[in-house]
Amino acid sequence: MFLKHLINPKPSVILLFLFLCVMLVLFPALIFEVESLFFHSFLNSFIIILFAIIAPFFLGTGLNNIVYEKNIIRQDNLVVGFVFVLLSSFFINAVEAWISAFLLLFMFNFLVESYQKDLPFSEFYNASIILSLATFFYPNLIFLTLILIIAGINYSNFNWRILVTIFLGLITPQMFYFVFLFLKGMDWSFYRPITVSKVNFLMLEELHISKKTLAIIFLVIVIFSFFELFTWLYKKSIKSRRTFMTIIWFFIFTVIIAIYSGGEYFYFSFLPLSVIIGNYFVYTKNRYIADCLFFLLVISSFYYRHMITF
Image (cartoon, rainbow, N blue to C red):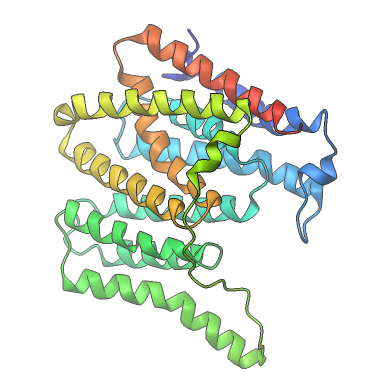
């Protein structure tokens, strides 16, 4: 079915991918006021619409390119990008989350580049700077510092100098920020402090059936994906195997942070999860089940986008 066209994709599939991003954004806008659906405190609604189309598209393609070019998934595909955009259906207007996800994507790329480098100081310094910048929008992302440490241990290049490098990278943007405020004599601050507020999962019973449907299908796909990954992980290359372990920890930490931070933080868990699900859709031998699950994910995503306006 459709999944086979996303593996070794033709240029026309990329256009279809862009069309999917456009439709997911405009679909609810056909029956709901644009100003209310894409409201932002200081950006115009039409800028938000354009951003809502462009951001998931480039996030999906960027993640897809990293996964393929770094040999994490050796098979050329566009599955990872499609999965990320479909999972993003839960978020229709999240400007700060899109920006922060771009930063985390670059952070992940630097971590993968540190593989088999004896002195990966620049990679870890750049990754920690980018993570620090993301905390200006979502302060609780600072706990993803553990991912930098785990990646270093996983790639066998972690030592006390790498730890100092990570620390210097984290404080560099903060120092520039506070010096800027001091020179400008500004008393106010847009930087948000770290807060802890556990998500109340009892509210799941009150969710609309469209969100419950998408969540159930999403959960089933996640179960199949992790089973596929752990079944075949030992057969992958050393780099792919170690990188997938970093991705798994990336997913675990983003989920834990989201549980104790708020719903928007779940957006960042879609980055590692899209790679894990994409790996399942690309390599599973049971193509019929994979095609059915992918089809259900597409249909439920559009159903949720339609019902979100009511």
